[in-house]
Length: 244
Image (cartoon, rainbow, N blue to C red; front, side):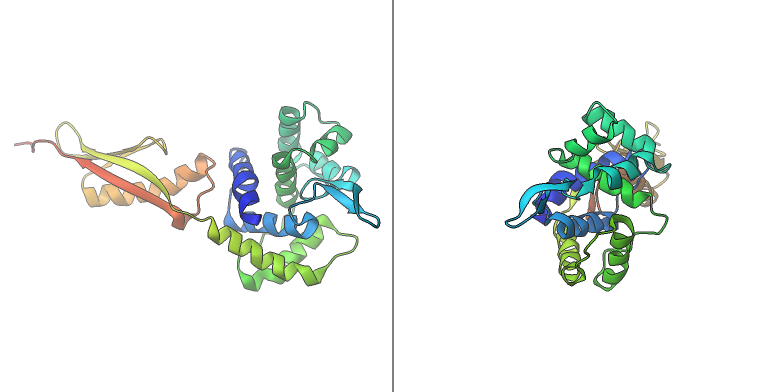
């Protein structure tokens, strides 16, 4: 389940928000997975209350936002308001608290947008997705979600599961780079349509180094959720008759 939500909800959401200046990162991915597991097991889209448990509680979505809590906070905080309003209007057609809150139950991407924006409002950095950062991640969760009955005993397992999910979906992503020589054969030119990249250099070695310097920047600029060690570049070369 964590892997599926990561690839179908979290990564597309982070790609959207990267276009708004909020960088996608493995630590954000892990934090969202862990909090989603802690709040709803990444299954329940409305808070379960009562015995037997029934989905009638005040918290909505996989990240369990209440109308007067997280929803209101994200829609009014200076660091998140503009982006939250933009996507509320796009996906709900309204920025009215109740309508946005209700939409979180059936729109996982909107719920994820609000969860990421809530983390974005926190000036403290999200800890890296490493096992030893379990307690630091817990403190970030506590400070932002403020659970009424925090269950510390479950967090460790969810944090480890989140890290494993992030590592498991870090599949190689390949882009083709076409290498040619300029008309006078004095410069080497590289073009990658997938990354909208074009650069040149005086030698192939310099060109290759230049492409690897630019490619990660283009990945981030395009809002692609690709881990640096998952990026692959496949160079193909077309030569020309040497100048004399």
